[in-house]
Amino acid sequence: MDLDVSTREEAGRVVVVAIGEVDVYTAPRLDAELSRLTADGRTDLVVDLARVDFLDSTGLSVLVKALKRVREADGRLDLVVTSDRVAKVFRITGLDQLIPLHPTLADALA
Image (cartoon, rainbow, N blue to C red; front, side):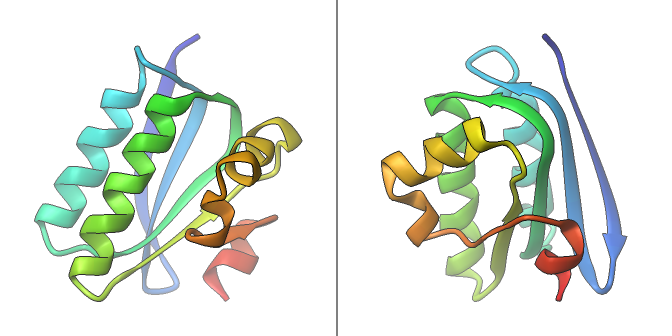
């Protein structure tokens, strides 16, 4: 499977939408976009994973790196997660305690 990544501004925040699978092969695409944004000083981010059906440890690593960069700049990172399979990865690793997970984009933007 492939991964499509797009970025837009909404409600004063940067929304990064990922569609597909985030794994060892595709995670660098998401990492590159999040790195570009944080390097440009964009540190109020929502990563929309609502249309991601698989996320492996490489994908988690990308999000943890982004969280670190965002926090260093006093920014904010929220995730939209609708798949039980993806949410379970965050629960098992305890990352749901570090990165807020939201069931909808509207909730993440609120």
